[in-house]
Image 1: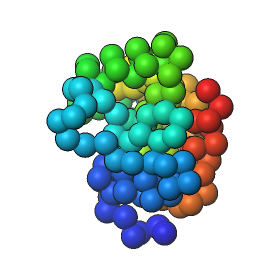
Image 2 (image 1 turned 180 degrees about the vertical axis):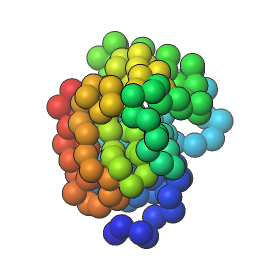
Image 3 (image 1 turned 30 degrees about the horizontal axis):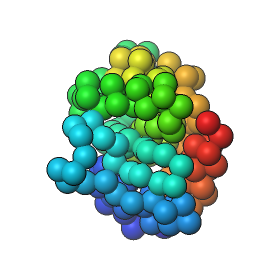
Length: 144
């Protein structure tokens, strides 16, 4: 599978929706949902996707993610605290795939260092758009 998906957030979404068919994953798009609503809906919850083209040169400096909006942070936090399953998946091209629960994502993603993010992630996997990576993410996401 590696190399068959465009290297951006849209390619990430297509890879995961395709890999998670068993869990009835669908891409969420359009004006039918409130601002900040996550990118993927699946049988047990929601997943917000973030993609970075490369790992930071200095892993100890804050890893800024300007496209993680306040509305997205608020939605993930509120859904998680309401006992909903809401996650953020951060893919750093050619380095890692990191999974965060909604509250942790709202508090530290885009603010902490890359080293800090890796240590606080619920799951940290080596980069690769493989069925194994998609399966590992979903297995962890089902263990709320």
